[in-house]
Length: 239
Image: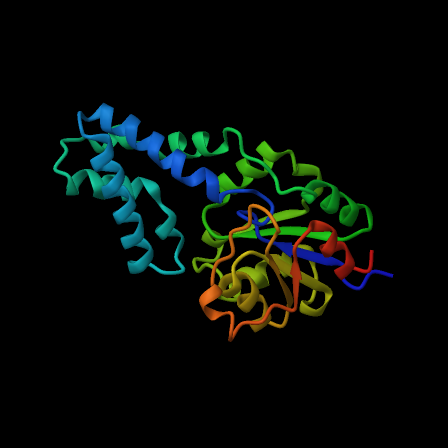
């Protein structure tokens, strides 16, 4: 008998190896936009990187902090480039298309999700940011048939660790807190956030290619379990 009948799971750096794709995608986008407005690509990249950090500081736990279009517009102004805002409409497309080129799943992710799905577990991806690009990531990875739903923070305004996104995920699959587990790579947003609303939460910290956030709070936030290999997740469900 299954111990749990639902899985809430983070997408980036939990299912998808994202961390290694951000830098080259941002660099390539900076080159394209710099060329378009006769700006220096390295200077623009440096300015965009700073503006992204500023947005995250000014708007913590809000989806707008992820907005690369706003970051590029602010950066172009900071470096004194002459630009037309109407020519920035494809910034997000350039970035994400580059990001998606060559992305990889963590080893064992597909097989494990398939086994959970076959066992009757409802699987919901719970991710910060906009919904549209989360859908495109899932489609690119070929996970459509393994996922029951996807919820994104823009649907509830605030990002994890605020409880609204977890509550929405539970509502979408008609589950209660004690019927599901959460898995993610962020001790604060994924683990602490889920635990605060009564959900058992695990930290994804693989032996290779992992990207754990929040180690500075490791003395205070304790995951209920740790997944080093995707097979470890199956054990949580009694499989």
